[in-house]
Image (cartoon, rainbow, N blue to C red; front, side):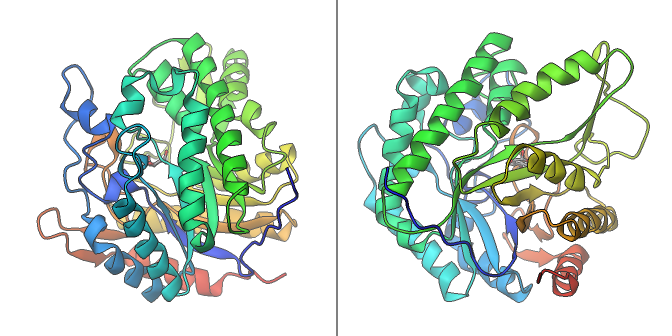
Amino acid sequence: MAQREVHFPEAFMWGTSTSAYQIEGGGSNTDWWRYERAAGTECVEECGDACDSWNRYEDDLDLTAQLGLNSFRLSIEWARIEPERGVISHQALDHYRSVLEACRARSIVPVVTLHHFTLPLWVADLGGFEHPDIATWMSNYALVVGQSLGELIGIACTVNEPNIVALMGYLMGLFPPQAKSWERFVEVNRAMRSCHFAMRDALRSTPGSYPIGMPLSMQEYEALPGGEEIVESIRNEMEDEYLRAVGDDDYVGVQCYTKLVFDADGLVVSPDGEFTEMGYLFWPQSVEYTIRRAAQFTDVPIIMTENGIGTDDDQQRIRYLTGAFEGLANVRRDGIDLRGYFQWSLLDNFEWVLGYGPKFGIVAVDRTTFERAPKPSAQWYADAVKGFPTSD
Ligand code: BGC
């Protein structure tokens, strides 16, 4: 393929991260919508209208601009673009064009994810990530997006946390299709990398010169005596196989939330320490740890495409972000090529199986009126960003 010119935004990117299904509402043509209504799942409630961002995206972008953030990560819902196999919705493409234009009108760099956990029903019904044609279907979809929206995209993310889709859907049985098999987990991880390459190459053949990469879920891992082998094998599947594959990408996305501790029996559910609403260890140190780890594997620039905390206690969030910022400063000081940081998330939103319980937002959303109310952490973030030394 001919060399494509790639332009990174000049300024360090500060933003929040969101996904279509979790904030738009009405994602009824997806596997998740069906999954929430099926018997025998762990889902606590339905997504429904989410934050109504399908209609209120301008409010979200106004908030972003008011906070002085120069970037915004959102995702495009494949099920809306291609509601049936081979049928393209130009109305949906027009909608996303308006969203991207609304970003540009506010000088906000749109960071666009093409797949964030949800599949169109037709894809899921044909076997989803286990169908031999999945990479072709996804690259066809990427071609449509690239041809139509490429000129407006600031950064593209192909598949969000492919390793979590594989882990939760095929090993833990907590996401669709609820499988619990190491072999299927490994196979889907492999398929995910093929999907990423196919989508990346499809996007590269369409207009625009934006960087393209894949956001990976990474965590800090700790092995207690006897847990070394488990850490080695799970981390190899979850991280190393991916990190070894991103060399031809334009950047790698790192997403982290916590530290995972393993002993000889597996994951230690309650190691000593402070916990978050998700039951995660409060561990902002994972920011520095994961960025450094990614940098050991690859020379491509790094963007922290997600990081945050689910908590009802906004002061705990501020403490978490304070720790995260220390890590960002440390890696920048050491010359690691980190280009941006995206806090998860702008809004309190639909946290998959856990519904609206966990609060990841720096902005609260009234579940009936959809009114947005910034929390103290929003102002904290706005101030911290202003004071952060990002020029080299
Ligand atoms: C996902 C988000 C999710 C967040 C918090 C990430 O794994 O990309 O969709 O809401 O973590 O759990």
